Image (cartoon, rainbow, N blue to C red; front, side):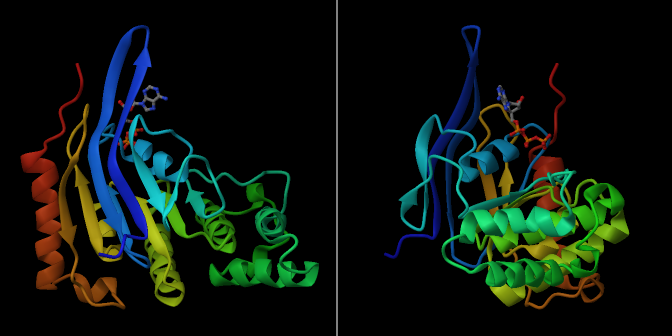
Amino acid sequence: MASAYLSIEQVGKSYSRGGATTQVLTDIDLKVDRGEFISIIGHSGCGKSTLLNIVAGLTPVSTGAVLLDNCEVNAPGPDRAVVFQNHSLLPWLTVYDNVRLAVDKVFRGRKTSAERHDWTMHNLDLVQMGHARAKRPSEISGGMKQRVGIARALAMEPKVLLLDEPFGALDALTRAHLQDSVMQIHAGLGNTVMMITHDVDEAVLLSDRIVMMTNGPSARIGEILDVPLERPRRRLDLVADPIYLRCRAAVLKFLYERHRFVEAA
Ligand SMILES: Nc1ncnc2c1ncn2[C@@H]1O[C@H](COP(=O)(O)OP(=O)(O)OP(=O)(O)O)[C@@H](O)[C@H]1O
């Protein structure tokens, strides 16, 4: 059997402090195909960011392993680009320079300066931000900053794009525009994407599969839902689509009936 592009194998994660150990994740097994769009959903504190950070190489596993394209992940690398909820642009650099910095880091020695310029602009244009290339982060909106963050991540040509609630801090309309952009980019480039979200509609709209996590501590994968909606997907067409409604109901049922959130004492 061919091995998966991204393979999370029996991953467990615990944190120890002052003699006490908290088991955050237990027995996480997940295979992601190349080009697949996966969402991770689960209640606050269950360990979604921990899992994403493990795949990013920012957090070490306690047990198990993560393999990407048959190589074990044990440190951050440009083959895994992360976009966080709150933009992480450097405030003293322009939009262009924020992306160019990453392009130079990844492609110096492989592309000429002129090619790196073109590639930077290409990725800014992909997220419709070429016009704002000379602005600094403080001069653009939250949605625009997230677009630049996505351009920067895409410009690294990562094997996996890791999105940690990328639209969580945005208003509903901006969020919808960005979701549409991400769907278009995914359709055009065929990126492999792992996205954390709290938004059930967002998960169904964007994903090929939705990974639903049980509550922590010791969170596990409770269920994995296939989203067999054809692409391209248009949000207005989906409002009354029986497959969409069935998927949405399945996630809601998992989160609010089977794994209800209980506030820690
Ligand atoms: N560095 C750390 N040291 C100790 N505990 C940690 C650390 N990082 C995370 N945790 C704990 O691990 C658990 C999972 O946290 P994590 O941020 O992964 O959850 P989450 O599902 O992403 O939450 P949210 O949806 O609220 O962002 C939490 O109980 C958190 O307190």
